[in-house]
Image (cartoon, rainbow, N blue to C red; front, side, top):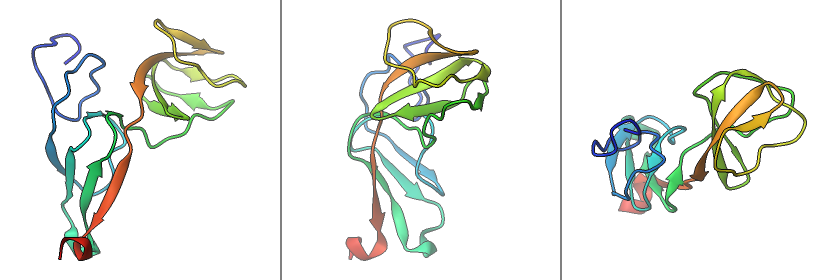
Length: 130
């Protein structure tokens, strides 16, 4: 975790995590966490025809796109283009999207932490495995 960099938890948001390929289980594309290219998330409901998802790029998962004039809670992650940010101070966002930086990034009432580049995932279907 970030407070103990010697402990590695696949899929946990760790800004300084070394690259490791992990395998985990879920029922949807990840929307949180740090994933290395090649990491696999197996679908716990494969009857849907989706076997799972594979990270095709290394980075942070974020399903929610940053929006202006929106309320955000501490801990929420958003993306702007290929960059991912984590809300570290709750509030209402401004009119301009945050940009990558080293420290707390102000955005009206909200403060963001730049996590890194966004991980992209490719869906794997059961049909593709046959």
